[in-house]
Amino acid sequence: QGSVSFSEKYAAWHGDEVRPVSSPLDALVCDTNRPVRLTAAELEAHPARARLDDRTSRPPLRGWLAAPLRDRDGNNVGLIQLSDKYDGDFTEQDEAVLRQLAEMASVAIHNAWLYEEGQTARAAAEAANAAKDEFLTMLAHELRNPLGVILNGVSVLDRHGSRAPESIRVRDLIRHHTRHLARLLDDLLDLARISQGKIPLRSEVLDLRAVVDITVQAYRDGVEARGQKVSVSMPDVAVYVYGDRTRLQQITGNLLDNASRYTPAGGSVWVSVEEINDEVLLSVRDNGIGIPPDKLESIFELFTQLDVSVACSEGGLGIGLALVRRLTEMHGGRVHAHSDGRGSGSEFVVRLRRARPPVAAHAPTPPRARRAYDILLVEDNSAARETLRFVLELEGHRVQIAADGLGGVDAGVRRRPDVAFVDIGLPGLDGYEVGRRLRAVHGDGVRLFAITGYGRPEDIRRARHAGFDGHLTKPVEVDEVLRVLGSL
Image 1 (tube, helix red, strand yellow):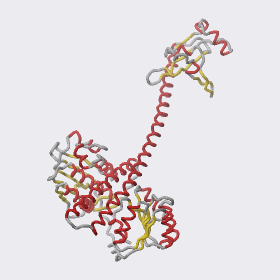
Image 2 (image 1 turned 90 degrees about the vertical axis):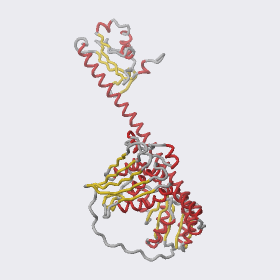
Image 3 (image 1 turned 120 degrees about the vertical axis):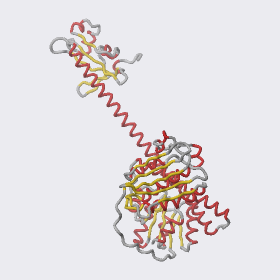
Image 4 (image 1 turned 45 degrees about the horizontal axis):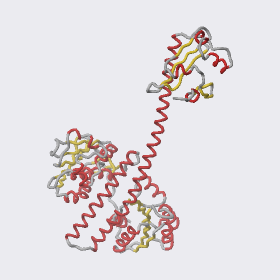
């Protein structure tokens, strides 16, 4: 390495102290990268003898033995040495033992380096992953506001807009594609949460037929808009599974949407539920473009798409099936795909454990009659605030509004609302603090609902701890708000 001295290249341990290596004998090992064994006589004749005596200020060495330490590529990184054997010269057996010791030390050093590199890489990966999740959460929050405005604007037009068939058709298209965008946002966020184990299942005994029925109804308009027919086949009796209702709807919806997206106009999609022994099978079959045999497994991998041109035309991201597999496995089930190849359609089958029927419950108490409420709406996004206010007032409710946290607290203290819908990401005081202050002033005399783009389980728990009665994730549609009001 040119003019770099040995003292700059190597270091040695002397007790608990690390000192630069400066012995002129070290070059015999470090430069040749081979073990060196010198007898007392050879040391006596060595050119470095005088320098050694001067450096150490002690009697001449009585022999010297050293072996190189090597990295994984075989390059020298130092040495291990012995000197001044008590009796006689160092032997070949001594050299073999030291060579083996040097090899063991080299492995240990290499493993230590790998561990340190791994820790550094892991820390960097965790930081990057956390930044990614934070970005996705913020992205979803920012996108959900305009999506909510669009959906609520369509609701206004439904009530007071033109009844011409063309106008109704345009509104239906806007509503369908806006909801599709919202589902894509949810899928992206859910994948990030699942990878970190942040999605708990709220499992209960469910009739899978009811889950499938409500999901098919939600997707039927979109399937038929592509010129396709959807058929459902289910038993006449209840089919029970133990699972999370929302996540099972997500599994069914993603399979149905995937089948429709890869099926041309005029095609068909079949959805079926059946019991076989101790399993419940949910099947979604189509007569679309099919799947090549070598893709039947990789189709469940993240961002995998069979035909990019088809997926892009329909807005696919290649995450739906990956999410289906992960959610299914979280339920203790499994999913597989079958296809006879290109042009022969495909079938996806989800297998879940069958559950025992639930214990009979008391009939639910019927909801009280609707009435007009005094409502406080705290939302910093002016478009979202005004559209929701407009719709609520059309429904006969009395609405007071605020654009920030302090304004919301002031309005809510001056006139106690029956119900308050509070955005969490507010300027000044955040929504959690607004909820805490309103709860402290009015106690149980006000019903508090958080409206936010932050829909993670920890966000819901935090809202509960702040005193909120419920949590609505954006984009919040008017019908969802009206259902909340109707359930009070």
